[in-house]
Each structure stands twice: as structure tokens, then as C-alpha cells.
Image (cartoon, rainbow over all chains, first blue to last red; front, side, top):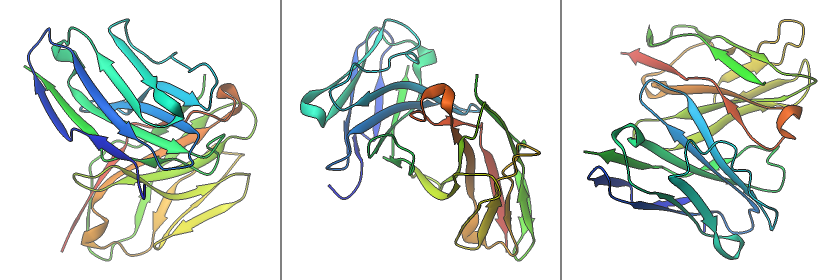
Length: 114
Length: 114
């Protein structure tokens, strides 16, 4: 597609429920990244996919968070048993291999856990 | 590890004023440096970049020069407009992460009044 598409744009969920956030990267971009933007915080790296390599999961804050990327394209970030501190904007980005030219970001999913 | 430090916001200016947003970094070697901008309700957009010392990135009247000696990448604009109101993020890609992941500062909100 022309840009990085994320869905839903807004999600309100009850504490303890599971949520899935979707990212559709730019066609041809082999690298895909998930970041979290919390109020008053910077952008926190979560996970990085590059082609068929094993993903870099070093930023995932707990084992309640997981992500997969199917067929080297669409990615889903899953948060199990959501907590109020998970409330944030979740941003997805994609880039060509290596990412040195910069990333293209989606508009994000605003997650609110009540 | 790699890190980016930005000046606290918000920065409040009148239209046509001169803008400086300070950014300093810590990284080994020669990272690539970026400024991203986030307009209200949107995702991050790449504003400008520099990949080696003394490079000057520029776009839309904004400029930043990669200063290795002061480990800085300050953002400047000679005459801001109301439409420049946004959050600005300084970021780097460094050797510590194999030039793969972007490390962001906490962002600086700019408010420009007519």
C-alpha cells in the first residue's frame, strides 16, 4: 500500500481482556517495527522483524506481549490480560532492509484499558 | 547503551520567531541522526536526517547539523508558522543496535501562536 496502515485506530478494552493490534506495512518493506508511546514518555521500542530472521523481541515489557508477522507482511501485536499500564499509543513502522533511510510510521492504535 | 536527550517542552513561540530545539546523543561510533515530527492525531513523519559528521539535514525550512564534537543535532528554523505546531522527536540509529533500531528522545512539543 501507499503507507503503513494500522487498525483499529482506537481500542477501549476492559482490564484482563486480550487485544490484537494489526499493522499492514508498505509493500516491499522487509523490516517492521512496533513502538509504544505512553503519555509523557518517549517512544519505547517493542519488537523488530527483518525478513525471515528471528525477530528482535528485546523490548517487549512482559510475557503478556507477543507479536507475529505472517508471510513477511502483516503483523499482529497481541497483549494478553491487559492492565491499565498498557494504555498507550502503539505505533508500527516499516522500512527497507537495515532501516538507515528512516522509517515510515502508521498513525497508531490508541489503546485504553479501563 | 545508546540514548537521546531532548529539551523539555512545551516550546511556545509567536509566528515568525526563530526556533531551536536542542538534541544531544550518546552512542559509540558514528550513528545516523534523525528528526521526526508528529502532527496532532497523526503518526510520526521523517523530517530530516544526517548520516555523518558535519552533514546538514534540511526540509521545509528546518535544518539540523550533525556535530560530532558536541554530540548534538539541534533542530532550527528561521521563521516558524502556526502549522509547525507539533511534537518533534530526535532519534538515532547506532552501531550498538546494528543500525537497525531507532532510539528516540522523549519529544518536544512546539506551540506556535498567530
